Length: 235
Image (tube, rainbow, N blue to C red):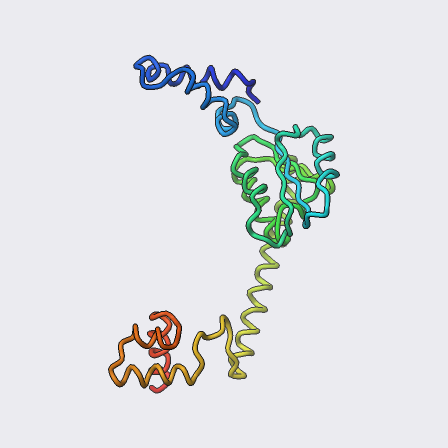
């Protein structure tokens, strides 16, 4: 990683013509270069980054952070989340993925810290591999830059594809079974059958779609779809 003064010197050299013209002061250049974002993006060596996650606030991140530091990750380069792995929005993970560049290493204490499910974790592993970012997992003793790690990544990817195929197959079978029994599949309808028929009657008497939507408390698009479905069913 660059020293504290190296980014400043680098940016000053890049912007020297602008500074000389008087449009940017040396102090402003130094302030920009001292920012965390600039230090992360303008560097000559790879970073050791770490990510830790616990599911709830009462749980402590200390054990994971200690393990990451012992593995060689600087404490200031460790990002964390306190939330369930099932939640899609995890700012700590998003930040470490944003910072990491080709050649950097991200270390986690266990692979399940990475994703909402095995499929999501494997998708994250594949994304890092495509970007040239090395992933290390301490519990599994895996370094995905090694031949063994690359083999495991291939196996994980095949397992993820298999699980996704099973999920799609089960979902299709469930939809077909529900349709055969005349059951509604997917998101529930916004309007009941009686409300759809009322909407049709109002439309037939000349009421505008805007008035019908306000009366039934739904959007105009919902009214249009309902009338279209009713007309199609009458064919």
